Amino acid sequence: MNTTIKCKYCGREIEISEALQHKIQEEALTAEKSRHQQELAAARKLAEQQVFQKLSQDFELQLKTLQKERDEEKDRNSKLLKQLEDLTDQIRQLRRKDEERELEMKKRLSEEEGKIKDELAKKFLDEHELKDKEKEKVISDLKKALEEAQRKAEQGSQQT
Image (cartoon, rainbow, N blue to C red; front, side):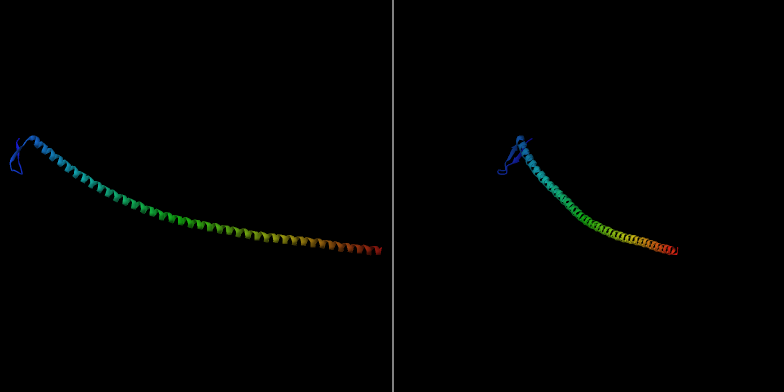
């Protein structure tokens, strides 16, 4: 295959041999490969940028979601702590009221016990006084009976 080319300076036609033709084809192929690799590298870089941007957006979205969940959890925890404090205060107040009621009941029982003791002491004193009075009456009756018997005995001896 004879191929001729025209010189751009002198205008003469020059025949190109197969070796030269092969060399030109290789240079064109190398240049095309280089251009293709550059395009491939640019496409790869663009794809990496797009993937990085997408991953960044996903990460930011996930981070915002996690922060929102954390904030909600903090709010929930603070509400639960507040409820726990309120319940603890209520329990403390109920215990205090229970202790006060218990003290009041003990005081009432003590007062009632004191009243009962006083009543029993008064009752025993009254019974004792009553028994003493009965004994004194019996003694005085016996004395009267004895005096009367002595007087009768004296009158009877005077008559005899």
